[in-house]
Amino acid sequence: MLLSPNVTKIAPSITLAISAKAKAMKAEGIDVIAMSVGEPDFATPKHICDAAVAAIRDGFTHYTPATGIPELKKAVCDKLNRDNGLAYEPSQVTINCGGKHSVFLAVFSITCPGDEVIVPAPYWVSYPEMVKVAGGTPVIIEGSMENDLKITAAQLKEAITPRTKLLILNSPSNPTGMVYTEEELRSLAEVIVESGIYVLSDEIYEKLLYDGLRHVSIGSFNDEIFSRTIIVNGVSKAYAMTGWRIGYTAGPLEIIKAMGTLQSQETSNPASISQKAALEALTGSEDFLAGMLSEYDRRRQYIIERLNHMEGVNCIKPSGAFYAFPDVSAYYGKQNKGKTIDGSFAFCEYMLEECRIAIVPGIGFGADNHVRISYATSMENIEKAMDRLEEGLKNISR
Ligand code: PLP
Image (cartoon, rainbow, N blue to C red; front, side):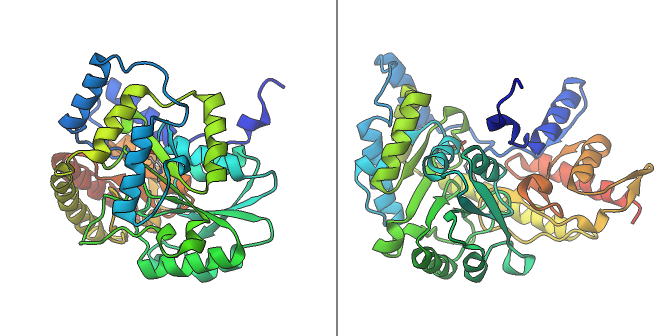
């Protein structure tokens, strides 16, 4: 056997199939509107880019300590204190090569073979696969439409077994855009503490909140939940820095140390220049955020309004991130040109081939009734895409 089960047990990203097809169509000169991307369409703010240029000019272009430069760790501690009411020492922080890497290192560091990791669905595509790579078993629990696609404390309690090690929580959520309320988080925290499991709280969309909502970190309620919380965050989404690859983790010393050891043998350190840019992001002005948010909000209002006016489409209004996650299952089992739309993948394939819009099948997020539409693209594109979607739906025989 050539390939190791370490890789063959992982499912390939279903979203890649659609993206690859969309790219191929674009290369052929077909006007495809990409609403599949999970990254801001804004440029990285200038003061952040300037800090990176200065780092290059100053010759800050060599290895750094494996877990990140001390001033960035300190900036992360200050940020977590200021924004989230979390008191960490720099030794409890590690800088990683993107938030994705942070999640991976944390999951890999604490999941023992046979451990169960609870992953609420709809989930970010990578969580269950990371658990599998670590030798654990992902246990999926589903958030219902009635509960805005979020799980309840009762559901969590019911899913916990003696093998449960960790819950992976993501609020605001990719793909749903839903946000857990403080009360909901407090109930989940009680169950976590009571049952002695850990929670990985992925807060990467923390700054992208609408309707005046305030981000609450589950680790902030009391010492008990704090000691069971691993915070993952990063600069990709809030500061439009997806290409710079900087994420960070804060949590119990033992876990952070293990992650550092793993990272030191795996990647050495996150890019020195990117660390200087991230330092500027976390310590510099955040004035640009308000403009970015109001533009996302304008798009959110428009897209949700349009979607919910389409027959057979049901979309809960998201309160965070930049995704709409409509239920389009009313169209499943119907046909276009003799081809049956038998689920979210076929739905997205049809939308791409016939209507030239790239959207992501919900099946990749554990929610086949849905599709994910990113509004991190221009209003002009969104308007055109909604027209195409509406037209496309009319051509599916219902
Ligand atoms: N967590 C969630 C929920 C995400 O959606 C993403 C990116 O799409 C990440 C983590 C990782 O972000 P990055 O690795 O770009 O920092």
